[in-house]
Every structure is written in C-alpha cells, then in structure tokens.
Image (cartoon, rainbow, N blue to C red; front, side, top):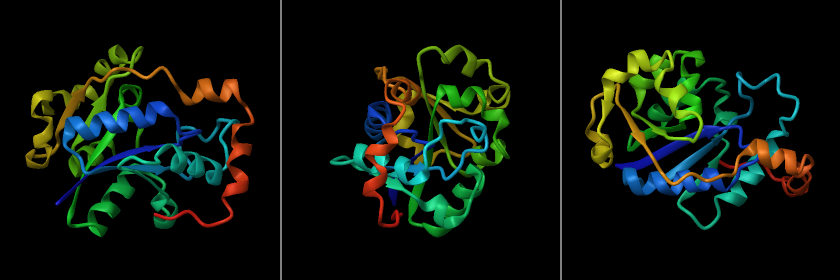
Length: 205
C-alpha cells in the first residue's frame, strides 16, 4: 500500500510553510508522498475578495512542490467535489491500493466543526493535526475536540497510522515556518500575475 498524506487548501499562494509541513509530515508519518489538493473554491472562504484564480493557485503549488515527494493535484476540479468529505470518499474508492491520512493545521482544527460532515471525515481517514503558533489553544478548546479527544493517538506511534481503527487523531509538532499566505499577499498583492501566463495547459491530477 502506498501511504499518502493529503493537505487540502486554497494555496493562495502556496508557500514554504506548506512545503515544510509536508516534508515534516512525510518523516513523522512514514509517508511515500503528500498530495496538495488545491481547492477550486473553499466554502468557508468564498467571501474573501483576495482569492486568486484557480490556475494561478495551482501553478504556485506546482512550483513550490518541485523536487520533493509532493504532488499538486487538481482532482477536486475533475471530481466536481465541493466538500472535503466527498473528496475523501471519492479518493478512497478510486485508489483502493493507497492509504490516505488527512493533514491539517491547528487553525483548521479550531473551526473543524464548521466543515460539512466533519465526523464523517474522521471516520473515513485518520487525521494528523500540525501545531501552529497562536492556534494551539483554540484548537484544543474547539467544539470538534470535545468529540475527537477520545480518539487521540500518541505521537510516537504516528508511523503506525495505517493500523489504527478510525476515528483516529494524532497531534504533531514541528519547527514552525513563519510564512503564511496572508503575509505573502500583503507583501505582493499582484503575486498571481507571475503564474497566470504559465497556465495555458490544463492542470493534471
């Protein structure tokens, strides 16, 4: 079985923090690779006025993933899935010889209860939560943790995640990367212009 970590997000734009978390997760979880699922549209961020076109975000992810066991994926665009739970169920059906674990930052765990069928996500695949400075307290006090806390597995058992019975949650802590998409957009509001001319071809899975 191929062991795949899945990191979903807007990647608006992709940055070194995404890469650092992915490489650290590969080591901690014994992954073969990480797939970056570039979201065609995040239901929780649809009101943001600074969301770049999908083509620019996907191109930034492909560039940041170079020379690493990381693959930028446009599969949500192909599957026409809007919510993570639907995407994960489709992936599990489509790739029966791969094992998937969902990767997310503590900031996402803090609002996990707002995701569609978040319990269904936890029952579908294991979840690895990466600590993020400034969010750990909110994550541990989040409504979803009231249910998930009983399913936490020790971090020293992280490489055994394919043997866990779901739901299963592991909390990981890596050296933080100071970069964030918000900071990059503030420094360069027109960042997407560097990528749009290079996206004449269709994104590949």
